[in-house]
Amino acid sequence: MSNNASIQIPNVALNDGGAIPQVGTGTLFAKGNELADLLAQAIRAGYRLLDTAAQYANEGAVGEALRRSGVPRSEIFLTTKVAGMDQGHHLTRRGLLESLRRLNTDYVDLLLIHWPNPSRGLAVETWAEMLELQAEGLVAHVGVSNFLRHQIEELHAATGVWPVVDQIQLSPALARTELRAFLSDKGIIAQGWRPLGGKEQPMAQIITGKIARRLGVDTSQVVLRWAVQQGAVVIPSSRNPARWRSNADLFGFELTAQDLVDLATLDLGEDAAWDSTKHEEW
Ligand SMILES: NC(=O)c1ccc[n+]([C@@H]2O[C@H](COP(=O)([O-])OP(=O)(O)OC[C@H]3O[C@@H](n4cnc5c(N)ncnc54)[C@H](OP(=O)(O)O)[C@@H]3O)[C@@H](O)[C@H]2O)c1
Image 1: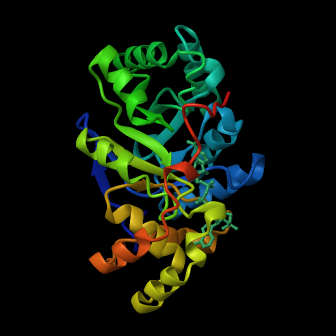
Image 2: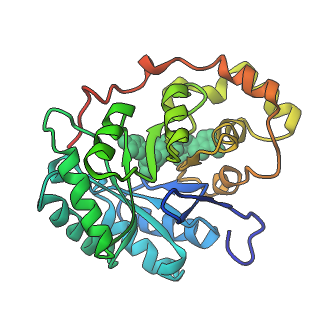
């Protein structure tokens, strides 16, 4: 967190030699001027990792938040994503240049392929172009989102480069155990989207409440700590400034091995996740 804030967010190492803050903020909690204002406040409060996407149609407001925050660009870890319609040779480059213009910056820290969209078969071409953009300094790190094991292996087989992160839906209710074991084996960080669990409501479960009461923390902190303690990066989002601090305050307590066993009972299994062999986004 920032100088006069008490919470420190540690970095975790990336497989390319870089590092990423272990907690960041999503940007889907507001729009337009309200987003620019709230996000600037969140940055000033200490958040450094920001997660946007061309598809969110909010990059302009995110760029404005960066400007309003007054925090130097070099202190921010900015992620955006290649939209489905921008996959493929030349299009990926054009998409990134448009994102950079909207974000009012000359590089992003992390560029992800938003969804694999297998029906188009353009993920490898897109990945190869992202590596060129990285070599040119327009992108510091490259990764993917919503990719399954075989889809990541295909990128590696074609280029010899593993992504630094796979941003996946992740919470105790969608534990993605097998996929995370593969990611961990390859040194790829699992980055959890919807880490508070959405409609699956892991915060509302009896076991979560019990653990939270014992530790004297919020149920939301138990759910986020579950991911962080296993090495994941999380990007919770809230339009409520009162929640920003607790969503980042995950490093002063620990879940026991038994807590992890108990929380594992909440896992609904891989079938409850979006199926990235079929679900596509543009
Ligand atoms: N790669 C992808 O395909 C993908 C897909 C979806 C999302 N994402 C990214 O992931 C980010 C986070 O996901 P998300 O926004 O869907 O889910 P989330 O962050 O898990 O949950 C947000 C919801 O939780 C509430 N909340 C936040 N903090 C809370 C707390 N401490 N206690 C109780 N409720 C709390 C928020 O309400 P209040 O605002 O009222 O606090 C909001 O309704 C997004 O902003 C986006 O950047 C990526």
